[in-house]
Image (cartoon, rainbow, N blue to C red; front, top):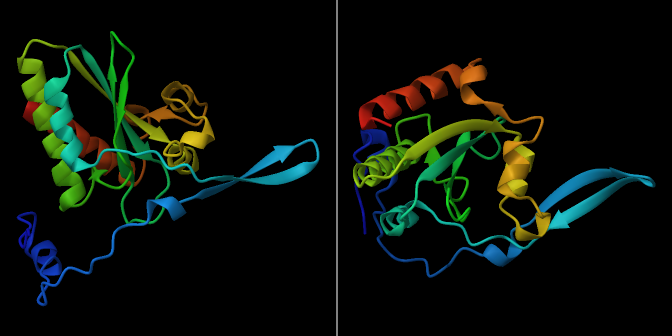
Length: 198
């Protein structure tokens, strides 16, 4: 069990479990769902998505080692915060030759703060630098995406594809939207790209 998080003392203290007893409870992914209100000819209808995709978290970064094509890595950033103090990031890796995607979950990565989300994003950049050193081309593309659309992308029954998000009229390049907290997010992104030479 990991007791200390080296991202900061307050984060470390919040991870200590003085009782150290496993709860035995596992996350219930079957009950995850999303509701969307859509306009139809008959008025508004509520559509419920409940087929949650099996997405990768931090541990999925090791999959990068087995890839053998040039990559485009989309950092899909929530435009509005939902369920977190930060604008969360959902990385999606596109293998350019095969068009295969590897999708990471929304909630394990961030470009703000000083804790696990930022640390995971830094680890992603580290893996991508190592991948590029193997002779492959890596492009990192940060995009701001409508939070509801990004959340729905996590459900298989939403029918959303990566290009639906990338080409959506509400999606914007991070470099073109540096207002409020997005100035800090952009600055962190630039620092990571410079630190890892991407």
